[in-house]
Image (cartoon, rainbow, N blue to C red; front, side, top):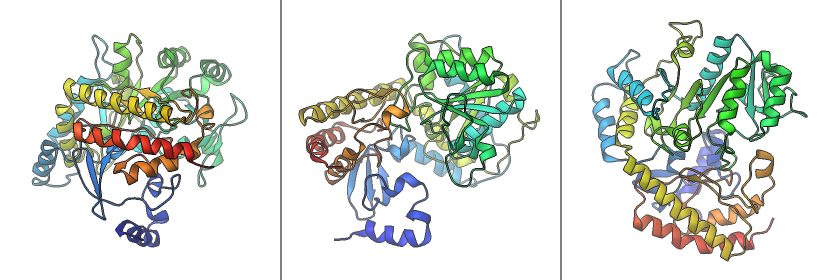
Length: 440
C-alpha cells in the first residue's frame, strides 16, 4: 500500500533527476521510496505521511543542538525581518569569522588568522584548492581514495593503477585532463604519501584530507597520520588542506584538529574547510588559515573567489547562534549519547551473531560488517554491505531514521534525551536479527 512518500517520490522523479536533489537521498543502496520530510523538532523528524522517527542523520551533521532549536530559529527569524540578502558586507560576517578563528585554538596553537565565508562545503574545498595552487604556483593535488570533498571536477577522481599514477575521471563530465591533476592514494598509508611526494613533490600544491574520514563509513586516521601529512607536505613546499566540513565543531569545540591537539598530536594545517555545523543548518561554509596563505585571495591577492550569497545574513545568524550555544556541556551530552548507541549497536549485532565493527571518531560512528574496523577505502569495500538494507529498514519500521547508506556516519544531537535514546535501543535487537538473516 502506497503512502504519501511513495506518491511524492513518483511525482519527484518526473520533474527532478532521480527524484532527489542529492544522490544518497534516493535510497539507492537500501531500496524503497525515500521519506519526504515535512518537519523536524529536537531529536525527531516527521515525514509527509505524518510518521515520526528518532533521527540519527541530523541533516548530515548540522543539527548539533537538535532540529529547530528555538534560539537558532529565533535568530534566523530576526535576521530575516531585516532582509534576506544584501550582497554587501554585514557585521554578522565579521563576528562569525572571528568566532571561527577563536574556537580553532588549543593552548598556544591558533592556526586560523583569516576566514572567508562561502555557501557550500563543495565551494569551500574548491576554493581551498585554487588558493593552494595560486599560493604555491603548482598544479597537482594529492587526495585519498574514499575521501569526499564535494563534487568539483578535480575531486571526482578515481585511483590509477599505481601510487604515482595520475587519476582518471570518477564521474562522467569530468575531463581527463582535469582529473589528471589529482593523485589518488590509499588512506592511512604514509609510505604511499612519501612515494607520491618522491615522484612529484616539486609539482604538488597540496594534500587534501578529511580530518577523519566519514564518507566511506567512519574511518579515523591512524595515530600520527595527520601530523605526518603536515610534515611531509611542508618538507616539499606543499600545503595541507584539512577538510572539517563534516567534523568541524561537531566532535569538539575546535573540531577534529582540536580533539587531536588535546590528545597530544600537534600539527598545523595550512587551510581548514568548514561546513554543516558552522551554518547551523543553513547554507553556509568557510575556509580559514594563516594570514599569508589566506591573503592570496582576492581582493588582496590574485586568487579569485566570489559569491553573491557568500555570508548570507540568515545563514550567518544561524551559524553564530549555533556556535555560541555549542558549549562544552553540549559536546559532553552528544558524546554520551553516541557512546550509548554505539555500545548498544555492537552488543545487539554480537548477540545476533553478525560479524561487525563500530568504528568511531569522536562522537561520529557507524557500522561496518567486517571483523575489524577498516583503515582504508579498499578495506571498507570488502564488508558485507548487503546486510545493511535489512538492518536499515527494520530500524525505519521501528521508528528510527538512519543514514540510507552503510558508508555514512551516524549523528547524535544534544536533543537526544532519554526517551529518544530508549526508542533507538529498543529497535536495535530486531534490526540486528534482520541483518543476520539478510541474503545477498
